[in-house]
Length: 142
Image (cartoon, rainbow, N blue to C red; front, side, top):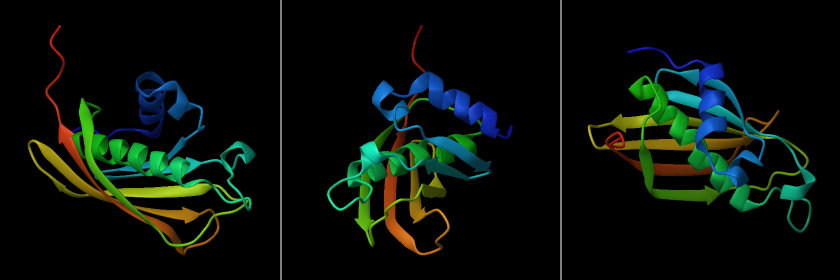
């Protein structure tokens, strides 16, 4: 299985994600065999009351990072869809980038299961934890 590079992953992001997700400015930081790390850059537009990063942006970050962990585990990007995602918020993030570390727990033929830990850049304490299930879809018919 070929290894997915950071540059390839960033190109997949640019070519396959909705405009509003791209507007978040997510950056692929690392791609490993069954894992990926993405960065959500700090942006005042994503702050909610009190100056903390809004939960909706962190949910999108967690969901998007799992796409790259699944792609890394499969060796390339392919059709998939989120079946479920549960995210528990543990502490707020203010004035910092958010890093999402996604990893595969089990990759099957039809489903992939994973988890994501979100942290504020420069702080090892988790700010949120997500578990996710993805359906792996057949390639589209041409």
